[in-house]
Image (cartoon, rainbow, N blue to C red; front, side, top):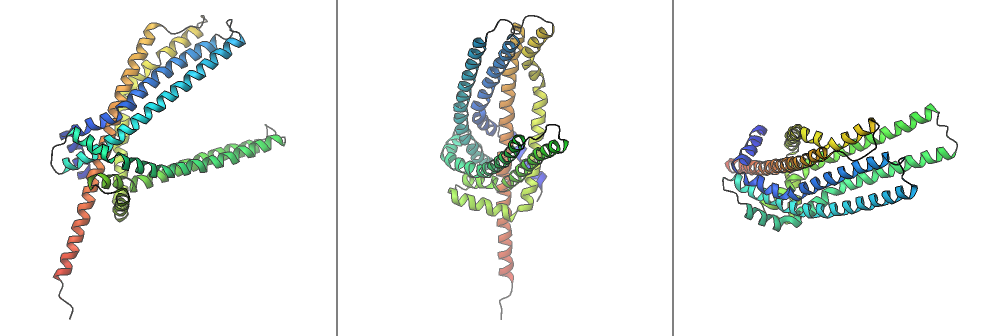
Length: 348
């Protein structure tokens, strides 16, 4: 199997049928907009937090500090709730867009023209199946998280008991054991994450493709995706590694493009820190720093939108092409076997 041809076909299809990128861009628009709002509000609150901390010795009473902390905490919780609602809406829209991209990618692979409204309509029809598959493949992450949390509780309980029994803080052996336990747990978490990511990356993608391209019911799509991946385990690992390289390259490219906007976002921080170092009365940053922050937020939001939509489009179209290639390959193999059996002389 020529893996390079499949990747090249994927990029060629996306370039020829740019509507696939548009469908994906619709799917991640709400999420990107929410990220932009969160970045702006969070940055503003962080700057105010820092300014107020610096002013605690400048006439603020204990009640003033408590009131300010209460307002800050309530405001932050309200923002997180707002972001959660935005995230839920964005997730539902993206479910529709993902299924729509796959449906239209299958048409593009056959040489047909794509259509945005038709793709989104197909996505609405398959959104529930995509949600069920997302939920199914979230279970390994949830179980791994619970396992690591259980280990963390054991470690914390051991630390607490050691402290109660008079564990000396200057005991080098105990400190080494504690640090070793923490790093061992982090290493275990990393290994678990890698195993789960590899398992999901090999077996999950074709289930989504089967659900949309062949319009299979959920259970049948799961069985078909599992069967195809199991019969082509070696190629699926290579496909996964290849798409990881491509997605990492896209992320690095956009990270480089985002560097100027990242510095703009830090403008208010630099303004507050500069005033503090010069011994001036703590105050908010200059207006031009806030202006730079607004430009930085808008730029980061736009780049996040383009990056996520492009990465998602490449991933979905790539696995649509993989699904078609593996399905055609298996059909050709079955047909070859049937022809060989038909050409064999009948048993005497």
